[in-house]
Image (cartoon, rainbow, N blue to C red; front, side):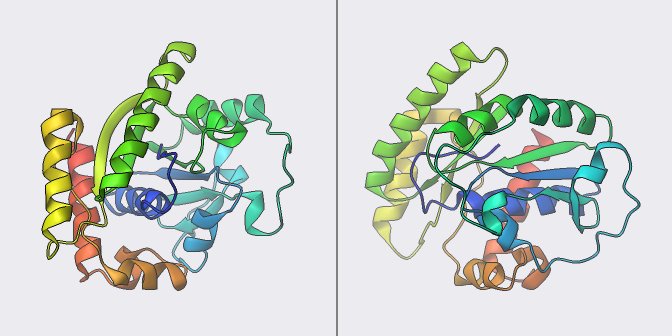
Length: 235
């Protein structure tokens, strides 16, 4: 699952590219949009190729591309009222059924540990934390890692940190490279080898309702996410 208490760090962008990247590698993938804003749902709404016959729990999901299915956020169509009930038990049952037919579950959580974020933590096993390569983001990262420690104690076998992913890295700005270096120095192997370079093509792809893999596979953002997919699969 993807989580960070700070918004605008590339969380949703990372979620949809991981999900589509896994699917392109031949894995069967379910993408859960657990953010009431519904950004992940909107970001893949123009994808095509999901015509495989659905079976079992997949009938509850929307086919998005080959090997990729989506659990839509209700916020993609209408405003989700504060305090709206989340049927966590039903979602847990769905996840158990999906485990029989998919290889990966990718969950896009909201940029806060509210009821929706807490539900997402209960559904997934590991957490990938995207962090923007800028100094203020490091402070937010420390808060996020502390929150994950608390969650891991309360949720047996859940909320394990899979890694920290530097995003929006501008190689032309020495300060962003310093941030990445500091992250690696302070967190060691917790920081993934992959990083995501700043690329306006990622924004353009999302505006077309597609991942960069589908919209502009030649873009450096797509190449960065391709490397991330391979690192996670090889890990």
